[in-house]
Amino acid sequence: MTQRSVLVVLYEGVQSLDVTGPVEVFAGASRFPGAGYALRTATLDGAPVRTSSGLLLVPDTALSGTGTPHILLVPGGEGTRTPDPALVDWLREHAPRAERLVSVCTGALLLAAAGLLDGHRVTTHWTVCDHLARRHPAVEVDLDPIFVRDGRLATSAGVTAGIDLALALVEEDHGRRIAHDIARHLVVFLRRPGNQAQFSAQLAVQTARREPLREVQHWITENPAADLRVEALAARARLSPRHFARAFRDETGLTPGRYVDRVRLEQARRLLTDTTEGVDGIARACGYGTSEAMRRAFVRVLATTPTEYRRHFRTRPATH
Image (cartoon, rainbow, N blue to C red; front, side, top):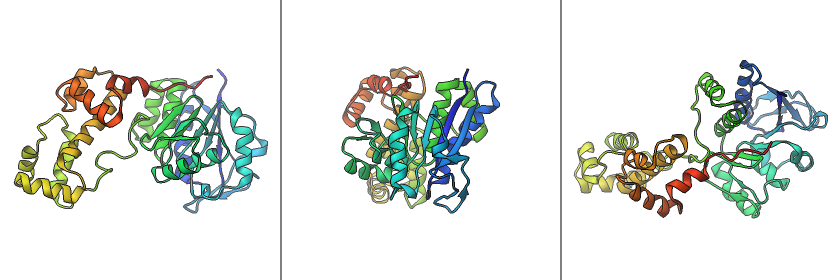
C-alpha cells in the first residue's frame, strides 16, 4: 500500500497546537507496519515562521517544491486575520488537487478566502463562525460540531478538535484499533464524535459560584437518568426548592430544568453517534424514560429525530 502523504501549511502567526496536535496523531501511526504517513511542513518561501505564541517553526520545504499530497492540512492562528494574498492564491490553485483538504480552527478562513468552502458545510472556532458566515454567505457554517466531514473536505473547531479530526482520518485509513492505540498514547479520547458540541453543557453556561450549586451541576452531568426534578436537586443542595431555583438561575443563567434538558440532550447525542445502543436504551440512560419523549426533545431542539440524527452523523467517507 502506498504511504499516504500529509502536507501541513505554515505561515506567520500560525497556532502551534493546530500544527503539532494533528502531526503527532499522524506520526503516531508510524509505529504500526504499513500505517505510517509521510509528513512534511512548508511555507511559501521555505523560510522559518513565528507562531502566535512566539515559537519558531522551521519548515521542510517551500510550497513551490511540494507535489500533490493525499492530505493537505491548513492550521489556524492569528495569521488568518490578515492572510498573505500569495498564500491564498497558492491554496486556490493547489488545494483542489489534494485527496483530502483539512482545516483546523481558523484555517477555514484561509480556505474560504480561496473560495474552497463555497457550497460546503463547515465548522471553525466558535469565535469566528459568525464572521465566516457573514463574509462568505455561500458557505454553510455550523457552530456546534467539533469537526465536520463533507466529502473530501474536513474542517474542525478550535485547537484540540484538530486531534479529534486527525484520529477520525487515521481510523478511516487504518482502522479503529490503530486510532485507539494512538489516542491512548497521546492520552486523549478516541474519539469525540464530530457532531459533539464545541462546548459541553457545563462549559456552555456559567459555573455556579457557591459550592453546593456547583456540586449539583456536576451531579446532574454524571447522573442524567436520576430524578432531576427541582425538589430533588434542591434537597441535594440543602436549599428550599424556591431558593434553589432562583439561585441556580442567577448563578448559571439557566433554570434547573433548562440545564437538565441540555445535559440529557448532549448525552443522548453522544450515545447515538458513539455507541450501538438502541434508541430505547439510550432514552432510558439519558433520563427521558421513553423513546417518544426523547424524540420530542430532539425534534424541538434539533429539528430531527434520534434515528435520523444517528444516520446523518455517521462519518461520510471521502472518495478515494
